[in-house]
Length: 124
Image 1: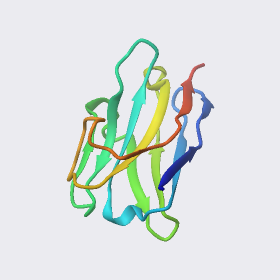
Image 2: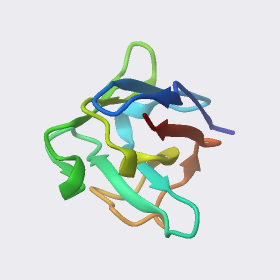
Image 3: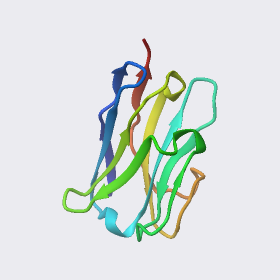
């Protein structure tokens, strides 16, 4: 069965950048909707960035608009999240997700596959 394995989290200073990567195995991402979600302690899991399977439509949480970019690399079968100008409030565990039968989903439930989570901590 398909799996998503993510990496790239870590500690970064405010204003810094990180790139999260999520490698898919057992299926091709190019026919899946993809997304990045995050969850801080005591908070609900929330969509950060999502992309339709066609790449025609994307969603960004308002607070990350212009700072984060979601992309897929079909050759590498990976999902990426480029995060720039990071803020302390971006601190959370970040999860990649992929799903079929959905167009552009900003809720967690429709996604079929999830990464294990990677911690992003933004602190001075």
